Length: 246
Image (cartoon, rainbow, N blue to C red):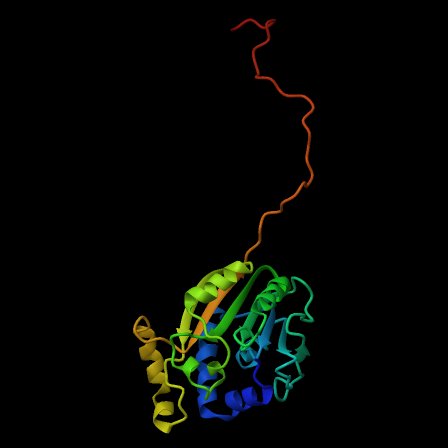
């Protein structure tokens, strides 16, 4: 079940907890993808809070929002680049996306396999995708105070296995949101410290959000193809009988 776009907007743009979550996830994305100069960057679900750093240098930025969720104009104060779309039928030409970010689009879908098939279709050769989902072992998936408390949470093995089944090759993974999903002032003031501490003890302290970067797996062509028939075999080269050895 998809969340309503108004609830997502209110969380990420109108609450201190949401703004802290937005910053933590966006910082991790920027470490993976520090730039996107001249590229087409596509976000699906509610990924637009993470795409603003690419607006200035990317050739094109598109925010896709599924119909059951709803759409809002984005970015504020600039020409709108967000559009409503079918969950498994995106208005992006095949192979035209260089970078793809999916957040709040996979765990809330009843057809995650079809979403991944569409993601694979729009990615071009050498394209990369980042999938951001609730971490099964984290605190955020256990609380309905944030959008990460809805839908199906994933472990690293579960998400990577699902990606491999649908034509993606996981490359790098990381976690974030080690701070508690609480609006209390104490936790908001110590949020940055907890994020730094959580990264150093991540095997013990599970982050609330799992981030996996994957590349599109391209298989070698199969089928009859074009075959060349050799009509005459070449024999082993031997010295001519008419030529005497030196």
